[in-house]
Length: 170
Image (cartoon, rainbow, N blue to C red):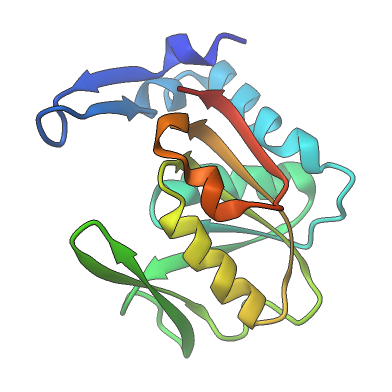
């Protein structure tokens, strides 16, 4: 499938000089969306994944159907203050400042096999933070799956030694 043709590029958004990869055009096409989910799940079909974990917000869009495809549960990772029960958290650096992600403290059990899923691998900062949080809870990370990878931002450098699947690379 030609996924690139289903992803719209919006120039100068959210600021001048950025070519934003807009997945909403892929999501509205049922055939392409289903095919994308299958491509994101395929390399992990034999890994016996217990949980798919996806960070807010577009990690939810792909993570939940990938979990269904793999016969696994889904765990959302949210920004600080968005989850209703007790949480664990991890802070990470952004270009200007820091951010904090949280997950329910009972979301992952020690030894569970988890797959991390997000729409985009750029610098690797967000997914690295999610990895640290999962590993601190005793999870075994079997891999990472992304719809899009922006190779020129070298996000893989932060994820060395991991099984990484990217459906479309720019």
